[in-house]
Length: 554
Image 1 (cartoon, rainbow, N blue to C red):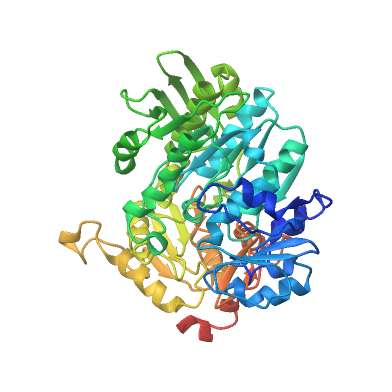
Image 2 (cartoon, rainbow, N blue to C red):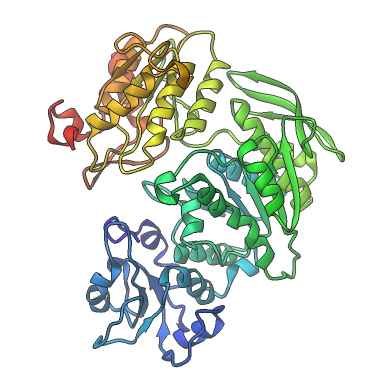
């Protein structure tokens, strides 16, 4: 629940179908067990909200417990704003509007929203993409392939939603949109005449049932590596949340246009492949770089301007060129190619044209060029595996040094702090450790954990020997703006400065407050100062006030 942050999607799409109404009784009559209930009032509703501030007259308000707020505490505000009925999980009485108690309102929300919008997933061909790293890129590649095939396709990613010619931002810190927002997007796509949608799904989205009613036809996984252990508790739980995409293919209802029920998995992802290969009960294919993959890449070449390879299967052999860089994007291209050719029947040559048409993705290995004699890049890499891939990609782009700038988030998986610092100490020439959403944790403490990882040798048996040297190969610079400036001052002609972890995101959290922050703007501001040319001002963070600011110690 995001009672404390706002509902970007509700604000964006409020005007869509304002006149739409549906009986709450009708909605509950359509829900799968265990949500079917007798005695639900015949109240017409005109929308669904989970944030009391987004409630409009005629809305159903669904009260849910969140990480920092409980929607039940805002029921009166929702009623004051016009809610005509409320769903929650507490025993409540005396409300001026009908109240329906459910054991799990969050799980019911996805089905209520799907019913309210007349089950748009049943009328669209829905391709789901999940994974730890690469899912946004693969989602965009698939969307481009569909457009190249003259298919009327939309896209919902953690960066934006594309509905025809309309591009909508999906928020600051990103995950799969809330269930009612996903269904609203799908309904809007139908209204725009679209027939297909590519939907990026996160483990958080699956764990909170946000996409259960989307009626997936094809599921694609990029990889399942170390991430979100703070939320899932163990890798097995995290993997199981991702795997729900493939089990959902079994309960998708038959569609007039047909549904392939195809699972696409990564043959090279050793930690997840065997599990998923056994788990998937529908049709399945795999992709990878080895000869044992169903769709594989041969003759791969890398350059600073992109990648080139030959995609081979038992049915085709096609040359593929992409403006994306790095070995991991070969895998992402193969995933999109496999899903589109075998899942949707798109000609391999058309699929290759779609891949070639993708110029890039905001905040994914995005170059920032202001005339400097070295390369500056902003990337979203915020996991150990993603950082490793980004650094390896940078190596293919230069013969100079690679200088990495990154942090690790507060109130999130602590183990990856050490892992990411170890990775950078091993693969980057120089490392600058800095802030990345410290939240209410001590930034000083986070940086100390990372510094310990940077000093640590990758082999546990030789801990303390052969790692990074603070002040020579790695530094701690708490303020992210100053860290980027510092990295630029280290750069020589031909080097790469790679700022990782924030990518396209539009804010950074200190304490409980979100501050406007864009790494790309910060990089441009730092480059402008470095070069003595006009540029944007450096975005403000409280860490820039003084090194002894209160937040530093938590």
